[in-house]
Structures are given as C-alpha cells and as structure tokens.
Length: 565
Image (cartoon, rainbow, N blue to C red):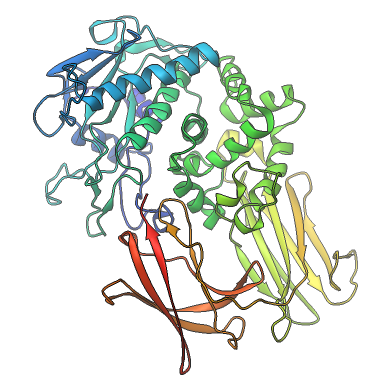
C-alpha cells in the first residue's frame, strides 16, 4: 500500500485520470453512454478507494514480471506474463514481446515525439532515476474490469482507462505550484468484455472503443497529464487538466470519438456541469471548449497556457492571459463559444464553426417556454462559467411548425471560478406579442423581447427561427445507426399525425422479439415530421431491426440497421 501525507492524498486527485467510482445516482450517468463515472474527489472515501482497488509494492503497482524498453529508449513498460494483470500474449511478429506491449511502446514513443519535439512541451523524461532508471515508467494493470464479487469490502467498480501518479520521491518543487515527475498505469488490454458493475446498478461495457483505439487515446491523455505536472498542479485545476487531456485525444487520434459521450452529457444539460466548478467529469465534457480554442487559435495556445501556469497563474487566469496574447480573452472566447456550441448536429453550417460540427450533439434547452398571449417570462440563476439554452415556442397551426427563439447564455464570472465561489448570476427574459417598455422587436417574427441581465457578467446570443411547413417522410435515419457515433434515431411520423402529439414506437429485432416500446412526441427535425428515439438501449447489438409507429388504428412499419463499430 502507498503511504502518503494528507497533502499527497489531495494532490493525487489531480493526477488521477478516469479512475471513477460508478453509481447510477452520479450526475450525468444517464448521459455518458456505455461508461458512467466521476473522478475521485477530495474525500477520504476517494483516497481509500484508491488504496483498496490497486495493489501496491514499494510505491508502485504490483506488476512487472517483465519489462521492455520502447524503441526510442525513453519508456519502460512493466507487465505481468501470467495472471489477471497480464496483457494478451499474442506475438505475431515473434519478437518475444507481446503485440499489445509493442503497440503500447509505439504509441508512447509517437505521442512523446509530437508533444516534446514538435509542439515544444516540457518533457517528463528522464525522470531523475525514479523506480530505478531514467526511463519513463508505464505499468499495465487490469483497471478496466470490475471485480466479480460486489460484496467484498475493496470492490472495484471497473471502467478505468488510465492513471497518472507520482510518489514522494518524484517531487521536484513547490514554487509556484507543486511540480513532479510521474508514472502511468493503463489498462492491460482494454477488452470488449471488461465491464462496469455499479453496486445495484446495470452492468455496462467499460470501453466504447475496445482494444487499441482506447489504448492509444489513453496514452495521449495520460502523457499529457505527465506533461502538465512538469509545469505545476494549479488549484483549482482538475476541470482544466481533464479538459486539456481529453482534447489531446482527438488532436492525436480524431478517428476515435470516445470524447463524444462526454460532450453529449454536457450538451444534454450544461447546468449540471458549470465550467467554473472544479470537477473531472465537467472537464471531460468541456473538451469541446478546448476543441474550440484549438480550432480558433491553434494548438500553440495549449503550451502557452501551461507556461502561464508555470509562472504562478492558476488555470482560469492562465487561459485568459494566453487568449490575450492572441488578441482575445476568456470572456470573449466564452461568449463566442456559445455560437460554436449552438451550431452543431442538424444546426451545423457547412464551413463554419467546428470542423466536424455535423457529428457533434446538439445543446438541449434548459427550459421550454410555450408562448401564451400577451406575454411569457422566465428567470433563473447561473453558476460561474455556466452556459445554457432557453427556448421559446410561438404556436402555429396545421402542418406549419412553431416559430422559435433560442437564447444561448453564459456566465462570465471568471473571478468566482478562480476562487471556487458559488456566486450565481440572475437572468430574466420576457417575450410579448406587443411592444413593451424597453423591449426590442425580434428579427423575422412579430414578437418583442426585453431582459434583465448584468452585461458585465452575462452574455447572450439570440437565434430566431420562423416556422415552416413540415415534410412527411417514410424512412428512419440515420440509417445505418452507428452506435458509437450517432446520438439518436429519427423515425417518420405518420402523415396525418399532429405535431407534439404522442405516438407509440415499438422496436423489434430480426427475430421479431420486442426490445423497446414507448410513447414519443411528434416533433420536427430539418422540417421532417419525426419521432426522436434518444433512449436507445446500451446493449443493442449490430443487426437489422423492425419498427412500428402506432397512430390510432394506423401503423407505420419500416426497418433500420445498427452497426456497433
């Protein structure tokens, strides 16, 4: 077991990536696809969990029947050759090194070369002789799969990708923030059979992209944590450290879209994950803000930010100072991000905003307000650096869709985020069908709006969409539905069905066994009158499926294909 001081225990929570305690009650669990979790936080329970679930020997994981040096000579990979922690022992090239270990060596060398030699980040190698040599040490350990017996006292929920650690001997300096050499633990196989088993909850697959894809994004993620700790562990810092590390996954390996599960959770309800609160899962989702920073200003802003941290600036201030060097600011960027975040999925505009905007999920409304004359209003509060969307509907009739007003808002209170203060900011919006005091007419529709917001702390973006005639379709889409990419399935609403009515959707597998049935609301997507299926069972397998939509005595029947990439 590791023996560490209270300070060391707190700092470990910064260093841990993807080590999670899983529970169906954890915020966002419904939104994180086949993996649900939250990082260890600054609690005794979290630190005890860390000690219980990994076996330690002399301040390092108790694996290492064998080790190999990567081709660059920079990394030493420790692994067992038998037992639960052993990686797959297949050796197709017969070089006496398991192919999985060869791949680990390759990808660590690969990300090192880009991070250090091309992008100019500080190097965690050599590590001053830590663990017996100057090599950077990597341990392969079965951290992805849960234990089989949930009744044991040290039960591990599973689902861990990787962990970046340091021992007391790795300490470098505490000026201005603590800096440390580190070592990394990653899963020994990222197997498709590894599971997350919450006590009393539903067992789910641990890795959305099993095998090498999950391994290589974990290498990019964890080694960036190692780099961050060469600059300093700012507090607060957990949200931004994780935001950065997840962003590096898609910078290095854009074909592995593991990050989308976290963006989906964020965009489903941004108010749960205000950026100004120091929390790992919040950082995972806000990798989309990091994507905006990189696409807008270039990858160099990442190194500049950590140089600012090394000068003694905590992470939010470091982002702000870096953006000012690029002629912007955290306030300006956070406001512009609203526009980028809105124009995703079916709201994407070709050639604008995110380079892959069409495959990103859409921000969902925090509030839906259905207008009734003469006026309607909504009010609320937002936490530091929170963003959210409000939607006003102006009812139409027949097959004409409602006019809508979407309001994207953000809290700009960087100071409270820096100090980790729960200082909320108020907002009030009112729409009316006639001009009222201090109101402005909305563009393209015959309604007026006024607001009470402090422009020093809240910025907003108003998007008006006049209604249009709906189009009846006869097919479901996207078809095929790609489980690891697509967020929801859209089914054709029957021709004479009314908007916002609820119809029964029933889905069968190819053997005509019912796998789903629920009443869904008729809505509009790109003028198509559809039902949106967004509660797709996580266990749905690749194959052909039949659907039926019941509108009274009429049934619309079709089929679609699921591909589990």
